[in-house]
Structures are given as C-alpha cells and as structure tokens.
Image 1: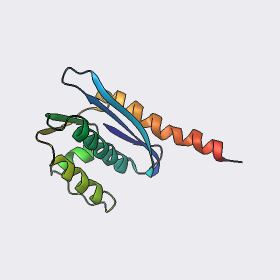
Image 2: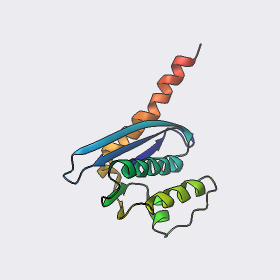
Image 3: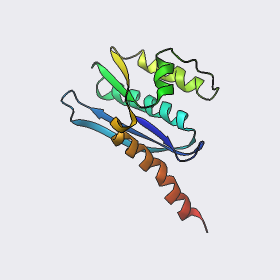
Image 4: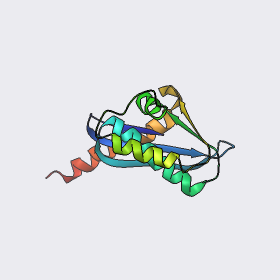
Length: 136
C-alpha cells in the first residue's frame, strides 16, 4: 500500500495491491482521496487496505508492506503520534488491525513498493487533469 500527495498538503491518492498467497493479484485500488498531506494519504491507504482485507479474506494471515517509515514506526510503537490530524487515522488503523487474526507490518524500501507507488501517484495526478477541465 502507498499514499501520495502532489504537494504537502495537496491532491492525494492511494495505491493498494492485495495479493493472494500465491502472489497473484486479488485486487488493485488507485483512488483520489482529496487534499491531504503525504502522511495522511499513507494512513488512508492503510485503512482502505485493511477494510478491503476484512471483506475479501478476513481469516487469512496478512502482511502489510509500507515504505512509510513514519506509519511503520508509529504502528510499532517506536514513534508517538503527535500530529493532531494523524491521531484519528492512527486510532482507526489500529482498531482495524485488531480485528484481523494475524497481521505483520513490514517496512520496505521505496523501490520495492513501485507498483503501489505508481497506483497512488496516478490517482493523485488525476486531480490535476480533472481540475484543468473545470477551469473556464
């Protein structure tokens, strides 16, 4: 999963790829989520992914891969959540994580997250073209 904001804050998107145990794609999501910061987009991607997982494969072990060091370390309890805008997103994510039987959070380098990065950036870029169409 990945979140992207063109500016910080700015037009933001999420990219999610849910894989089956054999690594085939179960579902991909590329969605514009409004004007957000990059960290908010990362949390929105995680929350959306967890909701999809609960629907598609609620009793399966889950591995969440993120290239967001902040989200990873906050979920591991290594960093406190200080940003008031992130606190409700963090609480929602933790609540969803607690509904799944087995979840592993893995921090991956950005180049190992290229597919979801592309999905997220594509979604955030759609706002620019949509916004251009709305101008007189």
